[in-house]
Image 1 (cartoon, helix red, strand yellow):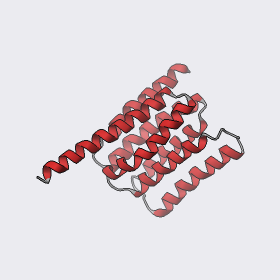
Image 2: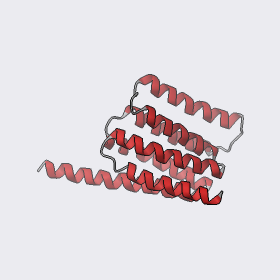
Image 3: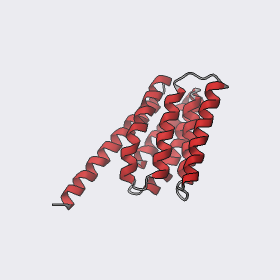
Image 4: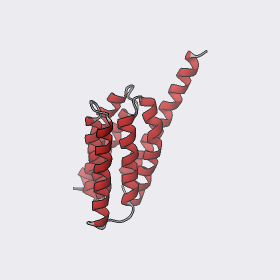
Length: 171
């Protein structure tokens, strides 16, 4: 099992590195859905339920948001995240760090469904990636930590590239 934990984590890291370089929001959503699915399995195998659930929901959300971005879809995914958070907290009595994972999931949910441009999504996701980084560190997921650091780096690099490109075009 240990080898699968590492392979899934490494796969998620590589796939999502590609996702943040996508030129359109929908390309990002497709590639990221795969990465989220891989990281979800990684967290489940580590026993980090909140991370596994939040990422699985995120993978499905990214696929749904390719076509549907209306308010009821947003409300539905927010409800699903909150319901799982409450269930995990009250019924399973999971540790309070689960709130960090679900806060990250909610930021991702709002950004993925509401925002239309890849650049806006990248900016919004800085907060979610920071929360994910904290959660991954607290549950001891090396690949989760690397995943979030890689994502934050990708976001910053892409935003700087876009800023320079815009500056050149405006000269």
